Length: 144
Image 1 (cartoon, helix red, strand yellow):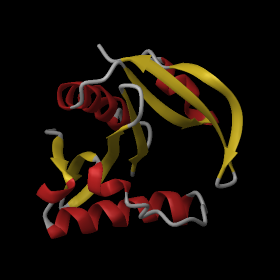
Image 2 (cartoon, rainbow, N blue to C red):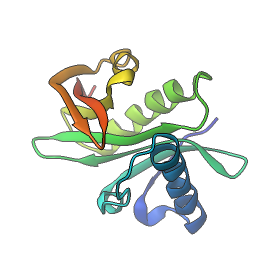
Image 3 (cartoon, rainbow, N blue to C red):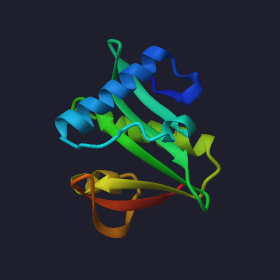
């Protein structure tokens, strides 16, 4: 499976629609988060995703932060337990470090996913905090 990596301006209308549909399905419907997903960060983000049968199967976005840091977020897979999340993160981390001159990569991980991110070298850099009703922990790793 080939990872698609695009800036916002490079996305087709269909790709953008499928990305937003997948994010709504996972975060708003499945996880019952009541929030405004479209936060204007998409314009400056690198969008990394896998497509299957015309739909986004896995997705994340990355954008620059202060102090030579990049933040990844909106990480999702439509099906769990099939290795798609691991593949998405592996390939996306390569794309992110190639695209952004950064020293650290950050993610605000849902608490249940901390172990997953630790497998990729992310380490907690904060205590637990609530975001949109879900317990999170900020994590970082070196951009290597």
